[in-house]
Amino acid sequence: KTKEKQQTIVKKKLSEINSGETVTIVSFIEEEISENLMKMGFIPGEKVKVVRFAPLGDPIIVEVLDYYLSIRKAEAERVLVESGNGEL
Image (tube, rainbow, N blue to C red; front, top):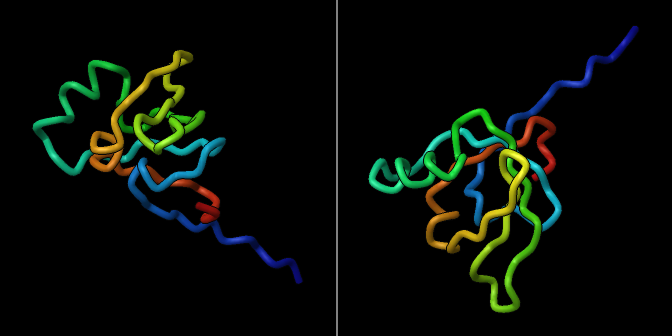
């Protein structure tokens, strides 16, 4: 018998992701901010990597579409992301 490993999808806010993790953008909590974030490359379906947090936790440096961005923690709290392996 072979046991198939089930893939668990876990959704969280981008602000809750640990440094070094790569996740997929799912959606935005507020439509108001989504337009500005989408202009910067935060498009649902795109991969985003949390590179590091500033010493006091704000801003957060992320990599999306092969470039680095610095976004406020308040903005990152409005981005829903998922990991396909359930290890967030």
